Length: 113
Image (cartoon, rainbow, N blue to C red):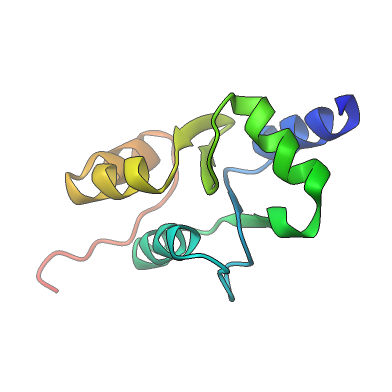
C-alpha cells in the first residue's frame, strides 16, 4: 500500500487538477463522477482523470490517502477539495471558480451565457 500512496501523492502534487473517479473523463461510470466532470468541463478546466475501477489498490489507496470514504475525489495543486456534493456546492456558490483562480488555474467565464 505504501507504493500506491507514494504514486497518489506524486500524482496530486505533480498535476494542477486531478480527479480520482469511477470511469474516465470521456466515459464516467457513475453519476457523481459524471457531475464533477461536467462542472470541470463547463469551467474549461484541464484536469487529469484516474479511473479507480481499474485497480482495487488505487480505489482503496485513494480513500486511505485522504481518509475520505467516497469517490470521486478532486485535488487542486496538491490539495484535496472534496467529493461530488462539496464540488457541486462550491461551484453553485462561486467558491470553486474562486478557488481554482486563486490557485492559478484558468477558468472560462460564462457571464451572460
